[in-house]
Amino acid sequence: MADIRLEGVSHSYDGGRTWALKPMTWTWRSNRAYALLGPSGCGKTTLLNIISGLISPTTGRIWLGDREVTSVPTAGRNIAQVFQFPVLYEQMSVYDNLAFPLRNRGYPRAEVDRRVRTVSQLLGLDGHLGRRSRRLDPGRQQIVCLGRGLVRPDVAAVLLDEPLTVIDPALKWTLRSKLKEIHRDTGHTLVYVTHDQTEALTFADEVVVLKDGEIVQAGEPTELFLAPAHEFVGHFIGSPGMNVVPAEITGGVVRVGGAVVGRAAGDGGDLPPGPVRIGVRPEFVRIVPGRDAPGWGGPETDTAGRDAPGWDGPGRDAGARAAPGLQARITGVDRMGSYHLVHARVDGHTLVSKTGPGSRHEPGAVAFFRFDPGRAFLFRDEVRCGSLAPLGGSLEQPLEGPLEGARGRSPEGRQGA
Ligand SMILES: Nc1ncnc2c1ncn2[C@@H]1O[C@H](COP(=O)(O)OP(=O)(O)OP(=O)(O)O)[C@@H](O)[C@H]1O
Image (cartoon, rainbow, N blue to C red; front, top):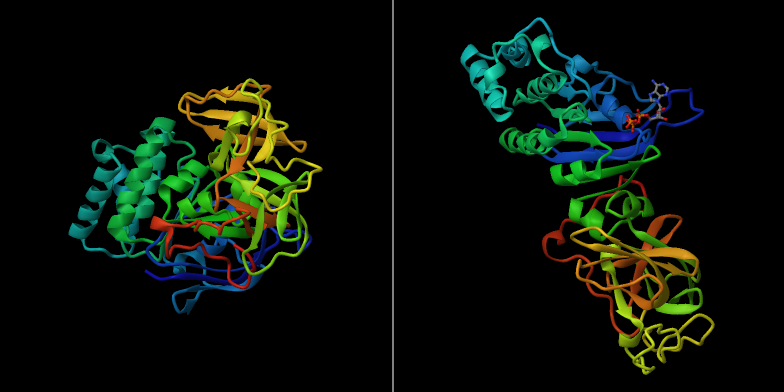
């Protein structure tokens, strides 16, 4: 097992007019299970084919451990690759297909049999070992391909390119957990390409998010959810994605449409004044009905909250008081069963809050929307530059518990993430 290191690797299919992959320096660490996540056309397959040697990069160098393999053909790289659709020796039995990579490398017969039976048992292929591969349905054929990719314990890496596309959805969950089991057993470096966030988050130790040929963030699933380093990660991961609200920093405070919503806390020092975007996930937006907002002294019957004292509304002098939240009118409520999505308009933008199934918010009401401390971030040019801190207090530690010591990585040489 070895790290796979990419140094300044990029790729253009059209002589440099456009770039499927922008120059990238990145290490896939030995024994880890990665998901390479991104939308269609962002360069996932190109990157995988560069690692396996099916494509020569336009620039850059590739290392497997301390061996440079940039010009080594696929066969010499000791990498197993499984494609989106089944590629099998159709005339061979399932057993022989699984045994092929081992026999090819001269494994002793008993070891071949032991490995084939272990993998076949894990993937539920025991009843099919004697059948010709072409007699299997495409889903089962793909499972054989997975088995063939995973059967050798000594490969440098296993690359899986959307391997569950042709598999029945009900079986996908089972297969993903089997893949994890096999990974635990063999310790392969595994790169699993997908455009499906659920697949990525449930499968990987580390998720690498690719956008327009660039890695924008990599980290443990929880970290990508709790602390997106790029607006794209906020949108692409989570359901629904992160809210983005345009704002302005003036005198160290952040305002939305003139209302102060918090203090600007820069990731690397003070943030200069100017436009910024607040990113906050629906899970971290709380709703305080107008009359319950702190400082609200209006008539009990008026739930509008528009004139609540203590509300530093648009056009008012914010002062140093803590605002009860962003005032907004609820425009709709989606009842999703286990949760509700409450939609509101803030300064011309939509804000969504995910609430419990028992919440009683109604369209037309005006309420205060508050962001959990440490869970609302500030973005400039789509890259995170800071956090929204409470006006009076310090920012709560946004990452705690299992995330400690597990910060995401940036592609080396690149700012951000
Ligand atoms: N053989 C090719 N010739 C020219 N352009 C290509 C070729 N293969 C891919 N591209 C282009 O390179 C870019 C990246 O494609 P790639 O297939 O790597 O993305 P992807 O993320 O794997 O997409 P998908 O999820 O749809 O497979 C796209 O703009 C694609 O159109």
